[in-house]
Length: 478
Image (cartoon, rainbow, N blue to C red; front, side):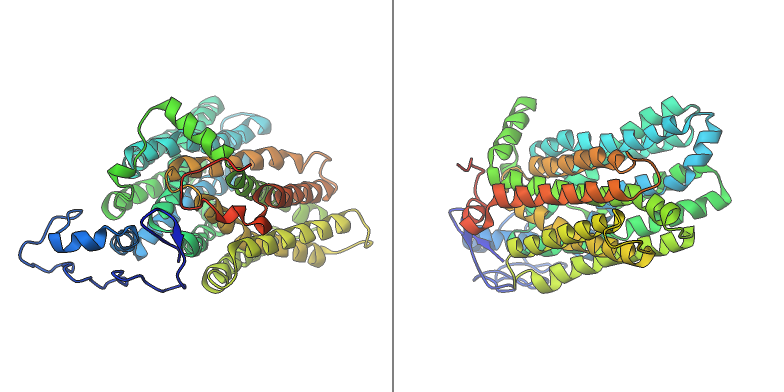
């Protein structure tokens, strides 16, 4: 893992190696007091003894100790739960849409706005919460966001009209965005380089399960209650997450690393981030790859069931299989590829597979291969989805490597770009009606090609510029 030297530059070490003074998880360095020890003169958390000061003067040692103190299975689970909030909030609600239409005497188009409002809130809220977390630390904005999420979700459960439901779904999305953006920022606080990419792959294992189980949970809730019960379940999930964050997630942004200033300073920071050509390239590449994923989520129920005649049970099986493919690819990325192959090469391979799969899907949809059945189409979707498991974590890691000084703002830009591009791409898949899969394949291929263009044209991994400035302040690349 790249370690930070005294000047903030990256000093590469072999994966798993430690610099002098580093300690493995659970070990203690000379002069440290192990948890539960009652050594004379023990200091409170965050303080240092005279014997520690020389060692902790090295930022690499301090970073290793911070990771040892702050990470663990429960913290990993909490961060995964925070990143799972969006799919849970969106996908659990999907089976209830027809019932909501009848219950509130609203049109289908009006009820669809409840999904759009939540998605828009999650996109825009990150622009606010990210800079807040850079200024005030990670815990306070996260806890406030979770409390507002609980309140808004509970009110959704009792909304008497579609208009009120739309309004509070917007608020739910705005508050829920805190979990997404701060989870990424916390990872950036604790990790760098290859270790950060590995941790993002671990988070994908946890959060990747959410799209699989969310519709199943929603369907089961509807067996015993109505659509309002789904929001009560989401409220309970929010309460549990808030309690876990309060008890288990420590503050990871030291006061001396926080950003001063208000909205103007935040906007200036974001402009500086966007002026970094390579950061913008990774952000856009990840955003357009995410758009290909969103087009699949929006169109696959119609394509698989209506065009290819699959039953709802078959569709659920295929949806779950594709999600498993994404998770497995993410674990291969984190446990096998990272540290052995450069992140840029793995990202390039992932984008290549997405592009090839989207091309094959378009050729099949347009009849170039004649009439094809469900199996070839499902195979193409499986490869496209699986490649997301190496593409999305690595675009996040590569972008965040360049922004240690403003991880919250950087995370906000990454998340907002993904959600906004996905929100634009999603309606396009049905633009030609319900009798063809061509729009889905066109959107996927166009998104993949734009992602490749951003990666090659802005990141320029072959030039070596993407490797500079990853652990220093963001600068504008010429």
